[in-house]
Image (cartoon, rainbow, N blue to C red; front, side):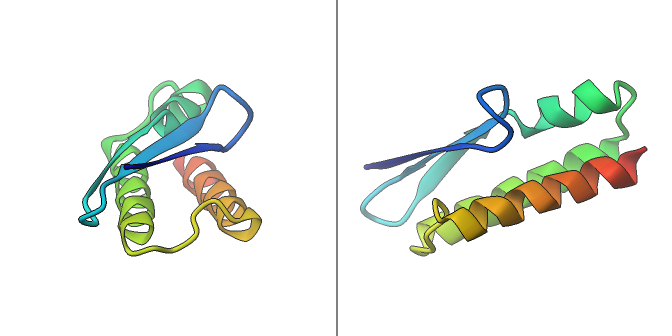
Length: 88
């Protein structure tokens, strides 16, 4: 089993992935906390956006994409910023 820990905005916000040898995996993250800390009245659509982003990250990791690369993590940060900025 491969475990991946991606701190996104310091230690408060992170993504943990576990990928099995058969290509299946699980994800645990605190991205929703990022949205709630900025916009306490977050809309359901905003939470769905984070769910979709998490699903995409998990799918990439299961397919062997290097989600730990600096460029990929920066892309995640940019996507999170876009979700948060559009929720305000």
